[in-house]
Length: 140
Image (tube, rainbow, N blue to C red):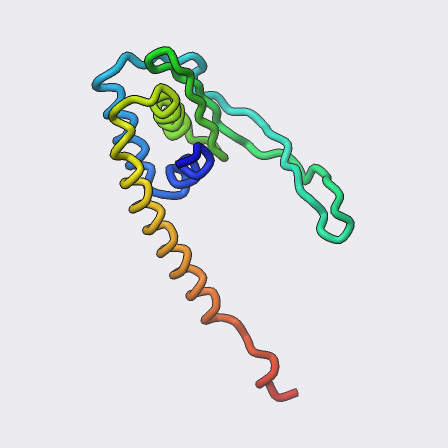
């Protein structure tokens, strides 16, 4: 599983999952924090659809953290003010970069969490579509 997909699942899914996976690594390995979780601003780049040109929509608050596990440096960046989640993401990223044996069964866990995220999205979309108005049946 690629880093981007793994990170999206950890951010969109249960934050308890990220916490438990990071704790599993902390119990078995020495984890050193290279950069404490800190807030920053990132420019949000957007593509304008009709002209296909890029422009900056504004800034987004992010929390960033870097951690080192077994000589590998992991990074955790999350939108908003979430220092604990940024730290957990950094530890998990470092564990995957170090190809630690604990990360092997995590792929199945991520697939299950991805399924739950998709089910939540479907339910939310269905709830939104129930409120949709059909203008063709309205009397004018």
